[in-house]
Picture 1 (tube, rainbow, N blue to C red):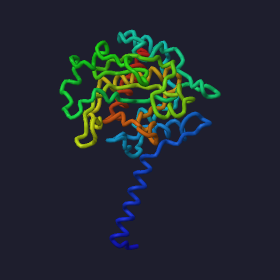
Picture 2 (spheres, one colour):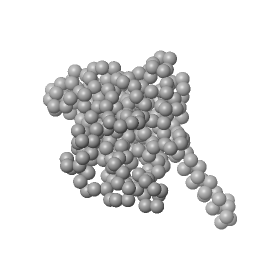
Picture 3 (cartoon, rainbow, N blue to C red):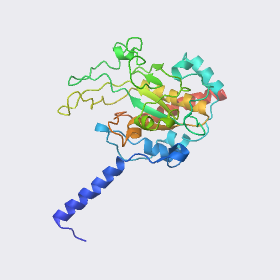
Length: 293
């Protein structure tokens, strides 16, 4: 069929518009299962759509190899093995969300009080340098926001994540993974879900999109996060999954907020492939330590 130019333009606009609308659609929530539609991997595929400028979501894509192979499966690391490895690395259990043999939080507002199953990745979107350039030393120890003694995210108002990770890979527990706490529009809208989601905040500064509105924080550094942040995020994910006994379903904050007014736009410039590679390395190290090989 040959379309006239005007009809062709209308057809292309409708097609692109439909595809864009599908990308911005919230993952289907299923009340009876206290979660989202599909098995664990299908949920993760939806919940890990890339987050772009102004919280626009990219298309779904196949999960990286480690996540595809493990999400929803039984963990193969014993809490005692993880505890011993952490001690060898001089990492406190408090820095990875709490005791690794303790249960995770539960959604006590739900009839069966299901245990946490979602691992939500945020960025702090702070500090905002407005129209100034983001400083070149944000990945150095001398930057104030890499020192939790100087810039403590537990202080101040508003919802808090469970654990914060600075750009040096250091982490600070604000709330144990066993304690429910909301940090998304979805949980605020459906309070009974609080406890199903564990929230991790990665320190990432922002600055403003020129002409994008006074005080906006639309621009993030690229790359968005450091290798040390991906390594610590991998450790937090493993620690939380060991506590549950199955690999958690990861999600991006902005995807959870899709469909809600004033939804968030984080994490920006997050690399699933880098995080998956960090998970591979850490999982292999723990398995090797477990077998003594």
